[in-house]
Amino acid sequence: MSMKRMLTIMTVAYGAMALMPLFVGDIRFIMHILIMCLIWAVVASCWDVIMGFAGIFSFGQVAFFVIGAYASAILAVNFGVPSVLAIVLAGLLTAGMGVLVGLPCLKLAGPYVALVTFGVHMTLMPLLRGDIGKAIGSGGSVGILTIPPVNIFGFTFSSANLVPTFYLALVMTVACSLIIVVVIKSYWGTAFLALKDSEDFAVSLGVSAFKYKLMVFALTSFLTGIVGAFYGHYIGMISTRMLELDLFCTLMVMLVMGGIGHYPGAILGAIITVTANELLSPLGSYRAVTMGALVVILVLALPNGVMGFWNKPESAVQEG
Amino acid sequence: MAISEDTLFLIYEIIDVIISGLTNGSVYALMAVGLTLVYGVTKAFNFAYGSFFNLGGYFAWILINFVGLVGGYFSIFLAVIPLMFVVGYGLEKTMVAPLRKRDEWEMKVMMLTLGLALFMDNLYAVVFGGRVKSLPPILEGTLEIGNLIFSYQDIMIFFLSITGILLFGWMLNNTRIGMAVQAVAQNPQGAKIVGIPKNRIFAATFAISTAMVGFGGILLSQKYFISPMSGGAIMIKSWVITAFGGMGSIRGGLVAAFIIGMLEAFVGWTFGMSYGMIALFVLLLTTLAIRPQGLMGRG
Picture 1 (cartoon, rainbow over the protein chains, first blue to last red):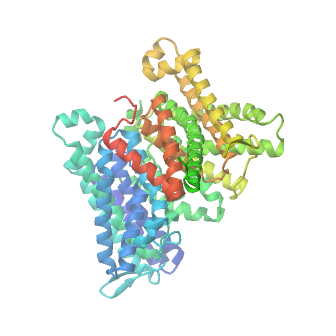
Picture 2 (picture 1 turned 30 degrees about the horizontal axis):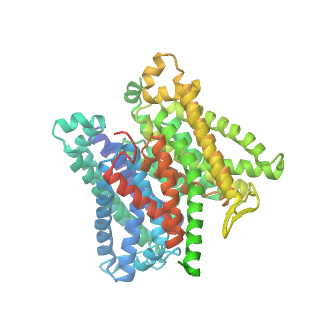
Picture 3 (picture 1 turned 90 degrees about the horizontal axis):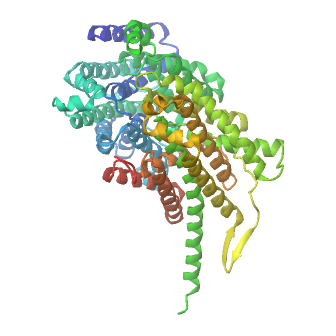
């Protein structure tokens, strides 16, 4: 997809969202949904970059999100670090974790990468709940309940004043999205596509698979960590419940809904899914069942997600 | 030489842990063999494996509670295993097979089966409630040799899993369908040329693995409990064993299952149960760092 088209779709999506507070600024419930849409749009986009563009079966995106949230919360609560600095530090720490997880993964074939990254996800819960987690201040199975809100020059962005918080989230999301567009459209993104299409051939032309794959791990986990940290400060409490399969699948619905590897699609997918998820909440315990069924149906019925409606002729040629 | 009371007690305890490792290991082996088969043959990565484990347990629970134990556990196996086979066959035909034609289908199968796992796990929670269910033990009583106590249940679980694996190995090497499965695993295109119905073999393999994990589910569920959300841990364990042993290598899977069963039992005994998963993961990472293809995997 051309860069112009990507930017057009993003401008329309974010522009429409930026205008929303004018109409629904008083309705807290809707403002909350809008902020969540922005947060998940970044996480879904990062996952799309690593999975759809770089072709790495990384299943650790939620884990990185949680690592970012916990790191920032622990820094802010236990060490009194100012929230903005804590968010940046959390992002750097998550990027470090991403590189650490990425290093062994680069030698492995597809399904093994999925297994190792998903293993990180699965081990994070007992780690944070157990004695090791308690030692670093994760609060065990209760979680961290008193995270201070983001504070810039004495102005607090908390759930008490949702409209400024929304615009802060919007700025952050737009910045992250632009970084991703630049990456996808740069030499870097082209290298990914080459590596995905034929790794052997790309390597023979001098594209370093190792360097680019490690960089994509670092970049996506950095952005995810920052957004995760912001989420923690916005909600004010985090627990290991985020690591349950539920959230993981919700994130996956966003990606499948938007279309894997059809970049701005992940943003649209996140907006649709978060809204749908909130609308489904009256279903109670049936919500997760519906979510699961939705993944199955979407994977089968929408091969290219909502972006498939734009790119129909192109994909029809590919499938034939 | 006299052995003090304490040392003796410790030895008994260690033997206990070994027995627990062997029993769990045997069931893990059964499940890992099914999983490694389905990966080796169809290259499909099944994330709903743990949910099928619980499906077997729940089917058995329904039968026992609504029909009763007619003729002991044998009738349960006779009813549930074919049922699991049919479920697996149907799922492969309706869900995995259509994806096979698309590009990046491996990733899509992972996503689909993960969605299926979420669907099934939460459906169990809705239908059967969040509380754990228990099955009656397969055999009551204990076997006492001196001061050592073995429960017949453990012995039976071990015996049945090993029988299942041997039966499976025999089937793979001596029956027409088994040989067809091997042929498809080695060269799908070649198999198609000599007239093996490739798509039916894919579905059958998926179904066999579903039946095996369902069998494992019945075996382990009567020792522990059936809980709706436990599928994730079982799935990860099966995958770790499969990757550790080498994907597609059945012998590797067997060895890995017993190593991991033992490791889990000993780590659980010394550090506490919650460290089991961490230990598994550390073992997997170190193995993959040294041998990316797993213990006995080929290249």
